[in-house]
Length: 321
Image 1 (cartoon, helix red, strand yellow):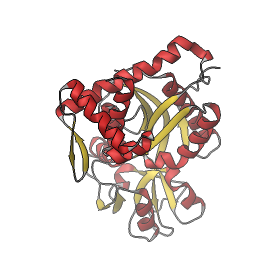
Image 2 (cartoon, helix red, strand yellow):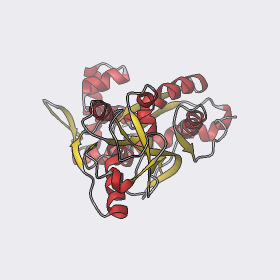
Image 3 (cartoon, one colour):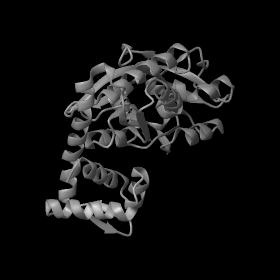
Image 4 (spheres, helix red, strand yellow):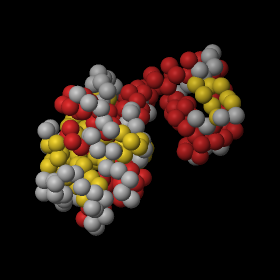
C-alpha cells in the first residue's frame, strides 16, 4: 500500500460510495474497486463492507481512516517544511461552517482564497455547530467556525466575534411599553413571551436555555420549535410569536420594516463565534493560510457593517508575505 492507495481509501470512506469517490478522484470505478481489493489483501483485513446504502467501514477500516489521515496530512506538510515560503501553497482544506455563517462568509472566502492561493482546494461543508464539532473531532474537516464547543480537549479555539442576540417581533406586537430599537427588554421578560425558537440541541437554543436557568431560574416559553432561521422569521413576521436571534440574522428584515427588535438586558445577551482547529494533529500550511484569511474576512465584514458584531481576533499577515 502506498500514499496513493491511502488517499483512495480516505476518499471512499468520506464519500461513503465507490462511485462518488471515483468521480471525486477522477478514477474509473472498476480500477478503484481493484485498488481497494489490493489494499485489503496487503493488510490481510476487511476494511469496507458494501450494502444497498453504499459502503461502510469495518472496525479495521475506522482505525485505518483515523491514522491514515494523519499520515497523509504529515506527508503533505513535508513540501511546506522543506520548501519553506518559496513553495506555492497547495492542497485540500475542508472547512465546516454553520449555515448562517456560510451565507455571509463562504462566497467572499472562496473568491479571495482562489485569488491568493489558486492551488488550494477549499471544500466547504454546512451544518449546525454540533455536527461540525463532531466532524472536527473525527478529522472530517480541517478547520471550522463554531458558536459553541461542548469540550475543548484536543481543539485550538480562537474567539473571533461577539454578536448581539435580539428579541424581535412583527410590527405592532408590543412588549409592555418598551419602544422597538430604543428600549431594552429584561431577559426574564423576553423568555416569558410565546417564543418561536430552535429545539434543544441547537447551539443557540442551548445557550438560551442555560442563560434562562442561570439568570432567571425559569425555562423558556418555547411555544414553537424550528431548527432553521428562515421559517422562524416567517412565522414571527406573520405575528405568530416572538423570537430571539442574532442581530445579523434579522438585519435585512428590520431595515425593510418587516420586523422590529429590542436589545436584551439583565444580562446583555451575546454569543461568541470561534475559529476551531485540531490541536492534537498537525495542521498544514494551506489550512493555516485559510485560517488567517478567515480572520481577515470576518474583520472586514464587521468593519463594513455587514455583520453586526464586535471583532475580537487579531488579523495576521497572509501566509507567504
